[in-house]
Length: 125
Image (cartoon, rainbow, N blue to C red; front, side, top):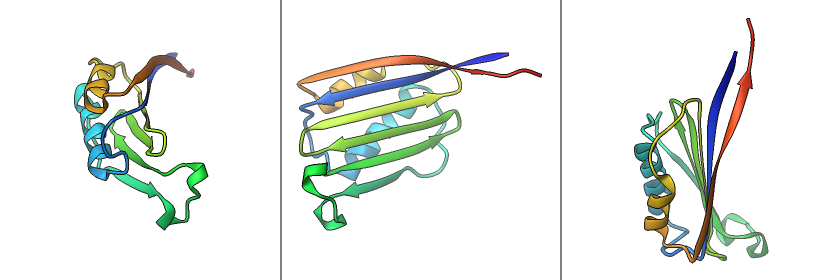
């Protein structure tokens, strides 16, 4: 038996807003969960990488967020230095909604790329 699971990727460059803001990353994750019709499990987690955290500016300063969902997970990564935001939504079931349009509206990037990859889990009895 094979199970097909979608993996949605979105990357925006030249994104607007405070990309070091936990509030912004939490908003993005909540929006992804809602638009995709998923169920959040527990609180979202965020982690800042900056000079105060010992991060080297050459390696990028940004914020990462992770939200477990009943169907799998949502991850958001920012690089404030370059205005880049990467979003991934993985699910064990197909999801509806226009995540890319919502992300474009929230982040207003100069340019953005998105794709959905159909992954397959194959098992047998």
